[in-house]
Length: 107
Image (cartoon, rainbow, N blue to C red; front, side):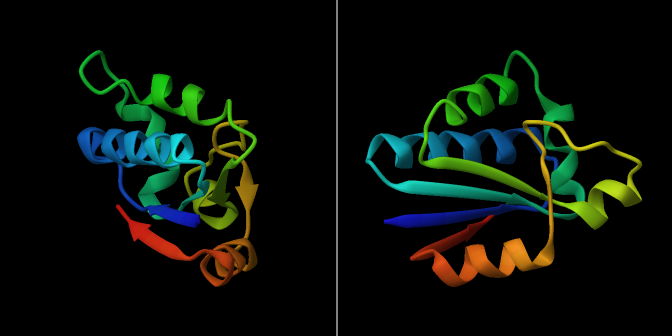
């Protein structure tokens, strides 16, 4: 199954749980794409010992069936640069993600 996850917030526990779910889905042999939009492009700032977001992201990106995309306009409006864990993309990429995925979850 192809699963799309849209993250639009920075609440550490919510983001951590979204990534935990994404990693679980990968272990079920699903393909998972995450799209970061709005505040979601700042998702890594909430990482802590309790909610280790960076650890979950590192695990996620080990899979060839995993991909992270980030809204370029949202990055630019926050004066953020694209990174490996927050790569710049477009609304067209979000549209394609929604179109091709069997299930979409939002966090």
